[in-house]
Image (cartoon, rainbow over all chains, first blue to last red; front, top):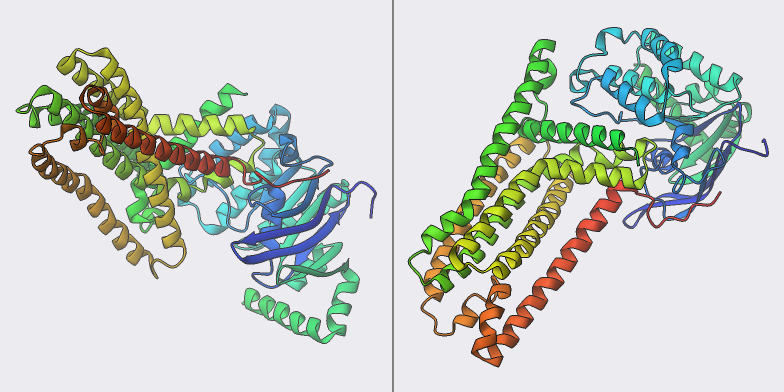
Length: 248
Length: 301
């Protein structure tokens, strides 16, 4: 691990009423890494990501984004691009209007026009650009959300189940973008409940179950460890069953 | 603070809120199936429908104090003015609560906290955007009520002190109305989220039923007030008659009557002030939780 991680989460605790969704979770995202939070549905992956982005209030712990304190330094938000599992979009706005607003707020200038146009073309989104968001399908909302998260070239990409609803071509484009992010010493934090995806894309995997980070390791060691212990074999079974269902 | 961004965000949020409130009862059932032309047309229609709604509600808010003045014109001016104050205040609370709770469900539906906290916006920018959004929604109506009721008091009493007290009371009414509405809509939204209905059709029916109940509420309440007032005007002690609905007006008169009335009035005012403080505190907490979910969380670098 690098001494200067892009993202550092320490002893994070999130509660919804009396239910503890995330319990003392700690991890770091180093430059050039893709860190996957792997776990079954309801394990606490989304809550952890929401807390990092600032959408959920943690009760304990600390978070540092690009060396900044996200609760006091609004620049920390420019360091991240977030794609939620359920895309956060304004229904009555078109994607073009979203892009224009995001560009103004984030201070993205004309120099990024080429990159934004590339994203629009790559995700085959030109035809949908001027449609109000409420008319878009789930997959197209996901694409709009990805364009908005990537347009300011953030240092950290936070992707919550990013492949859900994406067609084959867009999934492949996204995989390439993640590779590019890794190569350019940026970082990606991704959640998935599909082991296959974690194996192919991630450099490091944190296994999260019932709000606890059970263990983390390099991707190559995770599967072996999952197979090696009974309770993890059970989890592996659950994760691979999900894969089969997803593929169907 | 970046004024241009605040203005633009307030416009976006206002437009979205109007869209969500207007299409609320349909819950998007058929919206997805519309053609591109029709969906753009729908957005335009929603804008103009909301504008008409605003114009009519402004006229209604401005008319309320005059209507109540007409109803109670037969009484002595002293009684009439209290009746107007009481009735119009309650009517405005009810109306505001009705308008607000429907729109406020929209506030939760547009996922305002998520939208606001996704972008690098300062707390000041977020707060001002929300305030401008609410002002765009209700500013004209509330202002029209305040001006109109103040004019009623000046016309009837010729007393500028009463008129200025009225401004304070009207603002309090708006705060009460907004608070009641926020609580109602939040509760209602979570009821829907937590399995209030198994299908969108069930949810739609419940929403429709509640909308009817809420439309009827001010009308029913108006009748209750009228009946209660016709009874209380036969009571002997004038100071006690209208103490609960409006101690602010009564205290000026009770000063000249007896110590007991004055004390009761003072207690009434105290209760009002405590309630207003609670309401403002609640609204502040609501706003800050919308603006920054991290409030109270210690982050370290």
